[in-house]
Image (cartoon, rainbow, N blue to C red; front, side):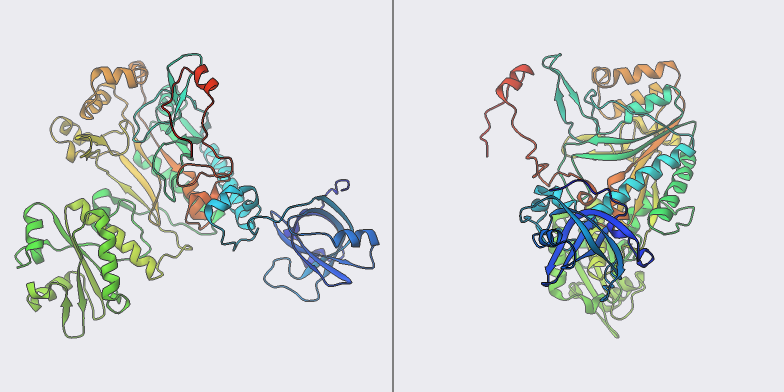
Amino acid sequence: MGTLFKRTHMCGILREQHIGEAVVLNGWVQKYRNLGSLIFCDIRDKTGIVQAVFNDEVDRDIFELANHLRNEYVVGVKGIVSKRESANEDLPTGRIEVIVDHLVLYSKADTPPIYVTDDDNASEDLRMKYRYLDLRKLKMQRNLTLRHKLCRLTREYFDSEGFVEVETPMLIKPTPEGARDYLVPSRVNPGKFYALPQSPQMFKQLLMLGGTDRYMQIARCFRDEDLRADRQPEFTQIDLEMSFVDQDDIIEIQERFLQRVFRELADTEISLPLPRLTWREAMERFGSDKPDMRFGFELKDLKDQVENSDFKVFTDVLSSGGRVMGIKIDGGSEAFSRKDIDRMTASIRTFGAGGLVWMRVGDNDISSSVSKFFEPDELEHISRVFYAEPGDLILIASGAESVVYDSLGFLRRDIAAQLGLLNDDEYKLLWVVDFPMFEYSEEDGRYAAMHHPFTSPKTEDIPKLESDLSSVLANAYDIVLNGVELGGGSIRIHDKSLQQQVFRALSLSETEMSEKFGFFLDAFNYGTPPHGGIAYGLDRLAMLLCKEKSIREVIAFPKNQNAVCPMSDAPTFATAEQLVELSISVNDIEEE
């Protein structure tokens, strides 16, 4: 062990223009090769890898120490940058090497349980258990650095637009926002609980009542919900709110922000204004309210073509108010076998679909799984809806509207992935606007807010709050990128009586309104400006900019699919003493 070498350069930045310079480097040993009179050692830091060379002409003690280096030892070296005889064009530093004349060993390392390389194929749980090793990978350091740049750019941009960053509380009153709250017991108020915020929604609205005018926060949020690739129990939002604005004002500010993000962090120019689709158009054309626009396969309605057919499955669905819709896969007839279609059929059963009808368009005829129920000219009539050509494959689903949307929406993206049409270097942004205000919950037997209960209905739809909740549209908007919802927002309700009317539509009693939202409603008595806002999923945006498939790849210490941290073993059981102090009793649970 020795003293600290104060580095002059990072490993990954050395190039041919540094040849002849004396440098000091610190890092980890990535690879070690002993050729007798020469020892080659790749040294890695967060910027990259450079080759260091020890020869037996240097100090014997240094050469002997170099002879004992192994992977993941932490070292410091001093030396001269030289031209590399056998260049490695796969490395940015591959044309140079450092001839070492001084070496210090800071610490040794056991054989690591995972390889510290970007192409390591260790399981995700193993990577997360040894996350401190996984983070040494150059890919992970690049991801964290890009995330940092995104946060810095966000603050710079919104500061230039007059926004003020304000922190909102982390210990709040439990409120219904669509997911389960994480509860925190209060020791000084026995039997009472705080909730961790699912979002800063009410507080950022209260900041508008408080005159802040333009608020932003890179906010930590918490939701106790089932996890997937783009969900975590704790996540980060770019949270924004503005006073005296309408939907167009908010969208215009956000579009310039997104243009700058993609220009500076993805080297991609985004043309403005971004396209907009209404929620209804997005569902009708793509079967999704977050459509991926990088490919076609648009949905087509087939009611007129099949309502008088002899195929009872279709006619029964239509007579009960359902839908019959399809998509066309260009060249899909040859690309997908009957076995492939059977697999697709099985995959959409999870959405409630009963089956999948197929049609293969040939040069002179059309074959179909339902040919016996249709005359050739009827099949031709269906194919003309899609402008189908020989070699195309048509897939048709029927059932309740939501089932058809979900099934075909899933299939179009799944098929695009199989055909290699999901180009990570292509960015297709759009706004989806005019969402339904409410959605009916079969489980609860009542209507719920599609976004949240503070969203303003369209002015012309306010009378429908008393008569037809299913047709009320909201002043709500989502920003979508490549089939992923990046963020969403709305114009908020700023009239107390209207807010109470919406709460009543959600089946909240006067008592529940007072208990859950009393402080919020009271604030409306003292002058509320028109206001609105938006929140982005920062993790999702960083994930897409890094071309990753999971937000866990852009979070330093994520949880796994069971909301567990394999590294620290959180969550854990509390001690009996802790529970007594918090006035909590817990049912007996067998420890695994």
